[in-house]
Length: 238
Image (cartoon, rainbow, N blue to C red; front, side):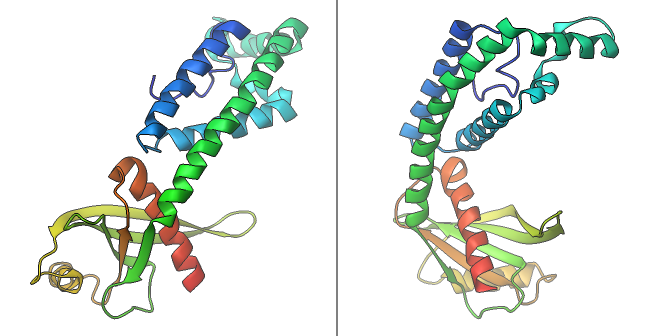
């Protein structure tokens, strides 16, 4: 089991003891990964399921969309009627409510554990510019290192701005370029100059270095934290 199915609450047998077994097995696995300081994809998965259960608790009509289509072999119209009957079945709804009441505090506790790890990792990271600062910061390079390692992972980043119903939103995309070993002759500014020579479409790129004081799993933990911290840094600097 890697992640919990999106429709775990309603898929298959709607039975408290069965769902309890599925949930506890999943949370045991999450705890093992958090014990290794590996946050993703488990932290994002927990956030999704916790929010989803809260929405279902507040609006049970959402269950009509959550029940999987395998519940019936009839056509879509009859399926919708069947879903409606299930939602109106007091016994099934009572079982679902019991499952939700059991699951919510356990999701919340696991989520708090993951959040504490995330905040600790974030507290270990420092961001600083490399070389001269550029006024245009929506595109450039991001260097990430974890001393005592001498290597720096180098990424190209791009900020996209899009509108939603309430306010402009930003998203960050990163593309891994290479890993460079830092030496006396090859510091971070020299790495930046090398990038300038090879990628001429960015003549004066914003370049930032993120240094982690402690060592963490790169893709499962450090990079997701770095991305969020970097977005916060750019927003505050704007």
